[in-house]
Amino acid sequence: MKAITVRNPWAAAMFLDEAPKTIENRTWKTAYRGPLAIVAGTQPDTTPEADLAWRLVSPRPALRVGAIVGVVELLNIHQQFTAECDCVLESHGGWARCTRLSAPRPMQHWVLGSPRLLASHQVFPYRGFLGIGELGAGISEALLKAIA
Image (tube, rainbow, N blue to C red; front, side, top):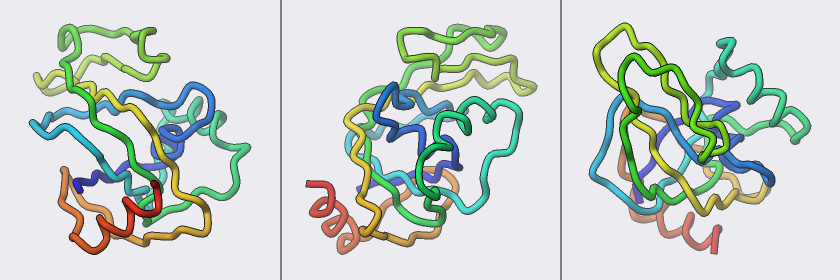
C-alpha cells in the first residue's frame, strides 16, 4: 500500500464524520490510484490557512502524530483551473484550494474518498516522508485487517 504524510489538522480533517476533507492539495501528481495510508506528521500546520481546519477538528480527542491514522482511496487527481486562480471549489466541500503560486507550478487536487479512520487503540507508529512511499508488506497487511 502507498502512503503520504499530511500534517494536522489536515490529516484529522480527512476523517471528520461530517464534511470530511475530500481534496488534498499538492504541487505534484502521481499516476497511482487506490488505497492510500495517511501518516499524520509530527509537526502541525500553524499557518493562517489552517485556522478553520483546527476549529473543525478541535472537539476531537488528542490528535495522533507520527503514526498512520487511517486509509483513504485516491480516486483521481486534477489540476487547478489556472496558476493565477484564487478560488474554492464548492463541489468538494470547500477543500480544493486554488492559489497564486510563486512558482509556475499549478496546484494538483488529489480527490479522496472512502475515509477509514483507525480506532484509537490501533496504533501504527510510522515515520513520515516526502512524496508518496510504499509501506512494507507486513504493515500493509496489518493495516488492511485493522480497517476491514
